[in-house]
Length: 312
Length: 59
Figure 1 (spheres, rainbow over the protein chains, first blue to last red):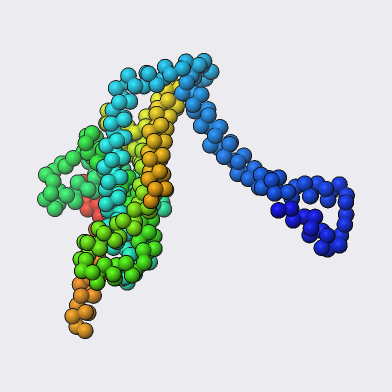
Figure 2 (figure 1 turned 30 degrees about the vertical axis):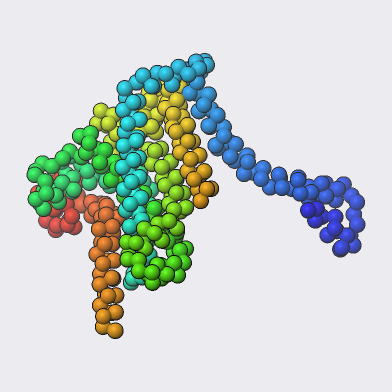
């Protein structure tokens, strides 16, 4: 709505100067509205759309660091698909995301249910639980790296003293299965607060009467959880799982700090492999192809989940 | 009344008992980072020292 001219009339100031006309033009809804979103649009174009377009272009060219290559079509994609390390990376990514996401969902809902109960030190406990998510991952992962050290691992030391493991204990970051377990552990440690706090918000929004009604109807704790809490949590859970799927698939920090993709590429994820080949190795074309390999995959996941949420 | 109270206490104990592993998991790395930052390299690389405990006065 054009507010300008009318406001001017009310005040009795009738100034038909050039400035007033410019102002009148600017205050039209279709001009002013677009004017307001231009800064955000500019930012998105420069920081999201442009790099994304460049990545697509790189992935279709044989661009190396220092040599502007030419267009090669889908050759990069063909090459990486024929590459054993890349196939291993696909497998790693699914194992990593599958296990980490399952653990985070189950433990996150459990933790949220506990945090929703009335208790003393509620705020303190909620704050403590949130801590791993707040501190920069690269730094805390360095702490975990020392905890998983081959010789001085505190995990092994404890387990040996408790008689769970026989000395020397597993070489956490040096054997493929253990390395994957270590990377997943750190990811769960870091991602659990996000799940717990978001699900907690969903839990708090469920009206108490529903539980009381179910209790009157004779539902036990398990029945109430399964038939009342869980169905009402579903929209929140769907969104959290959607976000977490994306972040877990594209995780970089944890793997890069803990294992650098080793031992023998057994913990490489798309992001770390793309970094190694594209930036350390200098083959920008292939690196871009590896990082974009995720895109249709995640696009499909997002599409399905959003459709599911809307149906709810 | 006493029965109600007992149920409440039991429920609170259940909550805390279940929260302890989560809190230990979340906070132990921070405790360990703190303890590690307060020790000398010689102590960190000594297999006989206790990794959890604060630095011993003898080093």
